[in-house]
Image 1 (tube, helix red, strand yellow):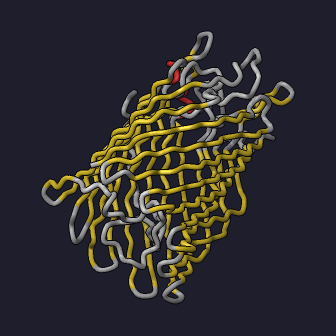
Image 2: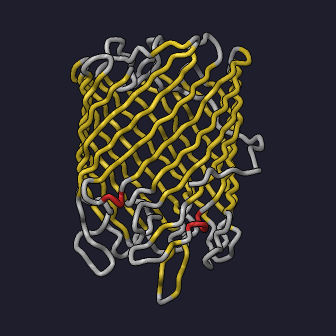
Image 3: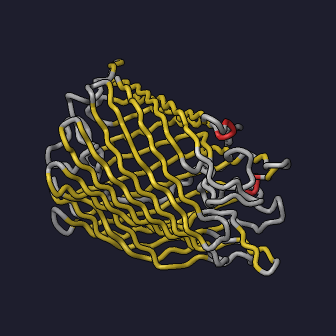
Length: 434
């Protein structure tokens, strides 16, 4: 894998505003809205190792997972697909976080990996890793500058709509991300500006039966910026306006005769954010989203958009997190109709999510999740409905060890012939932390 660099860098852009944090921290105010899994538990939290003014938190987890359909294939073997094939997967996930312990400002350096070995189908083995940093400089009361960057070396899930069905192994790719932001939140008005840069680089894929799929057509970089202006109606509610713009540039999307996929887009929304002390927090918004492509063969995407995110603690033992998000995603999918190849412009994806967490005992936590996503492949007739649900538990043995178990169901129902699938996954693992 090559580490992809670029000479283009962040022009100061404009992003997103009053942040209502749901991250739990030791010493956080008692009225802060925190979910069950995020709450501080001194008897079961890793103490960390002090290094000067930093705390070092290493972790490692091992697990065994059973996957009923490792290739995310439709049931029943055909000339094109092998059908559902199951396997056991052995995973090791080491990682660390080095976090500052300062009264002002903040800095965190982190790294983690996901190493998986398949029992029978060793061609599916992968070794993912990720590292990066986040920082915040407190300029003055209510004013701060945030910066962060990360590099990830990953594999594409077989259930991805962009997955190459004839690939002999999972597609490998790397991502570089960087972000910068400025926030000023004083009195009744808040303002936040910033930008985000992403660079995706895909490896070529070996095909079953020979040959190579040229993934250079998928390499792209994206610059996104937005500005968010908020007005505090009262101590619990804030109204806001957010404007976002993006520019996406492909290295060579026409390498194999495809369309020019470069595009520019924007989004404008109005909404309200709320923070009801100790009980709930979140935001809801509506607006319009548009993505315009350079190629005349790709239809532009334009539609109403909406979104919401909420964390609610109905009792001291239960948390409910709900959300909805609409976005335009990149794709290389094409549809063949009457012998003619019609490429999709992008995926207009709308995702609904629901998480419920419950503290059965101080050291026994339960969690259930559900996700539903509707993907419209603009410029084609393809529509995907994907569903994911899971049930899990975490048993905290002490400050250093915990046992986790999860069942996950994953499914896709699509108008694209032969692309439906269902799979069941069971996982049990042991986590160590210091």
